[in-house]
Length: 444
Ligand code: S3P
Image 1: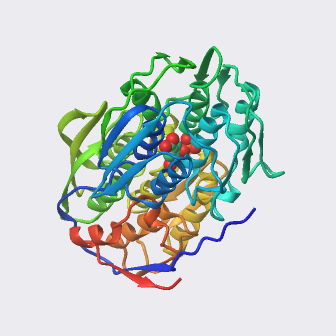
Image 2 (image 1 turned 60 degrees about the vertical axis):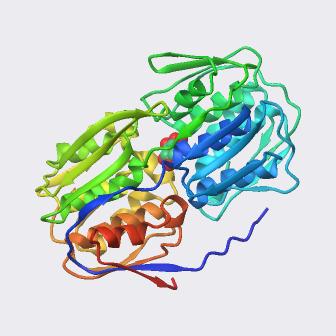
Image 3 (image 1 turned 120 degrees about the horizontal axis):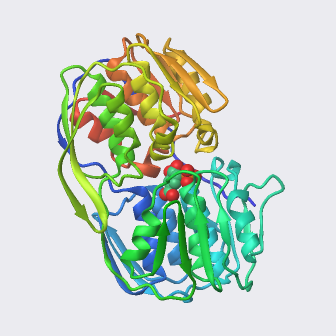
């Protein structure tokens, strides 16, 4: 099963130096935006979303639910109205559902559809078609679902209709919010109780949002349990700014001398703030101002001032809480005095790219001593030279190196950046607005 994805190729040209200043609002949280569409679609009533991330990943989720008969208005300026069809109101899609680059869309939707009892085929772009799916299909099979993968456990996923699910007790072998969420969403449709235990805390937006939709669930330490068959009631969701997007600016403002930047209305859910903890351990000057709550999620304005950074041994407990921020954290480490050691982060090898290898290659191109290991990296900070970077279509690699130019001695030419639109449309303009010397160029 192949689907052709065409994107006009795009490169970043980042000139060295610059100072970051001003106050900005980054785009909406990707994880919360996905879940708002999914839960809104199977709720009763109309869910009004504001601050929705109009990036390609979340739009893939939105289109998938439209293709299953859910009336959705928008997005217009981050506003979306989802007219919920109820827990069992989705219609079988006529075509394969194209999840683009989005692992979250594919894994969460698989859980939801497995339980609903619809036949569907899920496909994605060349990166997603290489990502492991047995981590969700195995536990879902234990619940009674029938889902075929390719021989190697990769997509396409072929979900068969009509298999009633039973709740399970599942102890996850890896710390993954996508796996946890996929099983919980299947559990909405299962007979009896479904419980998931995680080996370390991961983002809990699914649990919070289910409660926001009035769905009863129990959380007991590392375990979360719910019973199938209750109804979700539509609600209003104000999506905060994405801390994963803010992270690039936190690192940029930390490494560019003389910077002071205010990032407004950023989600600071404690399962996501590992990046702040790690940067602070390295000596970063980051302050949380005006801490408040919006739609069941804590938010704050984040003030970052440049500061001299030093290398650290990154505590393994922080890894799942900063899992998407390592490309940016590696740039901070490259600009820090001394050695930074990351371990316990094998998951980075199965993200949109192999983020350990791809970041090590890019840093080495810049003359930085970056040694990849099986489950992490050892980076000794030092001067960054200019050079040509290959982001391998990974949005976060592209944005991390765009920020690296602030502390580099030469120009960085970053290839294959079109996928920045999956999570952070408008990144280049916003970066320029704050002081990054970043140009975009059509072509690979
Ligand atoms: C996500 C969970 C994380 C993260 C991804 C979004 C989510 O993946 O990397 O960008 O929204 O649940 P894993 O759960 O596979 O670690």
